[in-house]
Amino acid sequence: MALPQKESTPIFSDATAGTLRLIAYLALAAVLMVLDHRNGWLHRARYATAAAIVPIYKLAAAPADWIHEAGTAFAQRGKLIDENRQLREALLLAQARLNRMDAVAHQNERLKQLLDTQQLLGMHAQLARLIDVQLGPTRDRVMLNVGADEGVHVGQAVIDSHGVMGQVVEILPHASVAMLVIDPDHAVPVTIARTGLRGIAHGTGDTGQLLVPNLPLSSDVEVGDQLMTSGLGGRFPAGFPVGTVTQLKRDASGMFMEALVKPAAELERSGEVLLLRDQPDPIGPPAPAPEVGPPASLAPTARAPSRGKPGAPAGAAR
Amino acid sequence: MNRVRAQGWAFWVGIALSLLLMLIPLPTVIQPLKPYWPALVLVYWSLEATDRVSVGLAFGVGLAADLLNGALLGDQALRLAVLVFIVLRFRSRLRFFPMWQQALAVWLLLLNNHVLQALIRAFAGDAPMPALSWLEPAVGAALWPFAFLLLDDVNTRLRGKGARAT
Image (cartoon, rainbow over all chains, first blue to last red; front, side, top):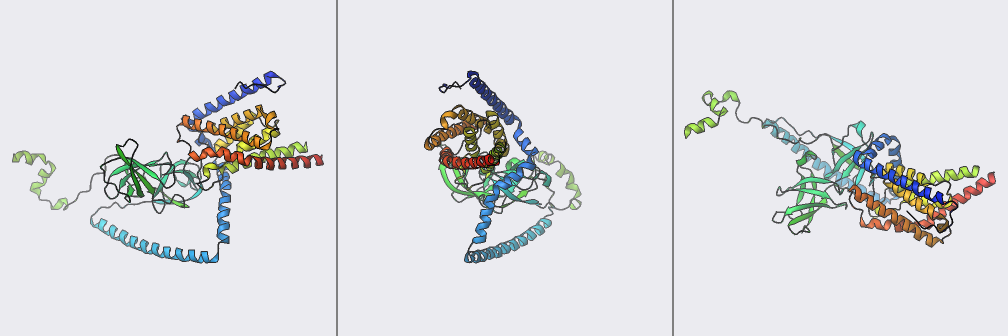
């Protein structure tokens, strides 16, 4: 910082002291950054001061809300009627679909009871509203209005009505921060619905695009294929739509193919999201399959021991 | 006395507003172009009221900004401290520049700030900044004359009012 001193500073040592002070502050900042990078102080500090910070976010987001409200207030009547009609149609369609789903769910339940599998898929979800988007200049994150006091914890999957949106990465007492699937730091294990091919969808930082790299050149992937969560890795439950393949190309090395994917969730539009309460199955071997077949009481008594030791009769036959 | 107090109010309100402006969500397309308001406000006050702004104050404002939306605690504190240090060092020249030259200087300051940010991000292992964000210093410099005139107007009025009151 030895800058040429052309203007006559009254006391030379004043400038030197200023430079020293700057160096001290720079060193302090560097130490803070390293410690924060290691220990995550920033998150803890935010947690502690959440009561003051969350209102500031709400205040900052207020002008956008006002503009939206003003737009609604001054929208033309015809447009509103049109929108009303469209929404009615959409509602009818949704109702019809819901009824059908209801029927299917009932049928499913009956079939499951018939098969004597007691475990029903109990997915508990919690509704959350978006408070703020884009918390940093280059990060694709959203802030939700539920937090630790409402039972949210880190790692919960966030979905909207169309597909997977992301996952919770930070919690505050009454708010939480979710990382979207398009964040460059995010990756989600996927499988192609048509062929079952597995892959990992990375965020690109670009809204409306995910990247599935390292697909073998010979693999059966087509533009338009649907991607679902595979449930591997234990973060996201299996079977939620992730996106649609829009483009296939060779990667830089030419040895693999990569697929560009359009996310299924409406990341730009969703105002309300669902937080999945139940974590998917933990990593590890699955539970033993339930016994199928006739009840044990009906089994012929003579053959009962041979079922217990399958190796013995095979040896006897040889 | 009253004058000083009025100016103090303007100073702190200006800083608070700049932090708030920094948080305002914008449409995704122009989000990377959002100017770095705290830097502009700090540059103005270090040109106009050198007794109020010091490197330490810039550091404090930076810490507050980090707490609000930083990726790393100390990142903006470091950048603002460097920025204010440079402005204070060249204050006597910057003050008497014509406006376009001053805007050019602000552009260089913001560009330096941006380079520092990119370096810090690289060291922390974060994803690189979007290419569009390199236009952000130019947007800040283009807005500088307006920000300067607005702040200067508020400052002069308060000073006038305070002087009349005493």
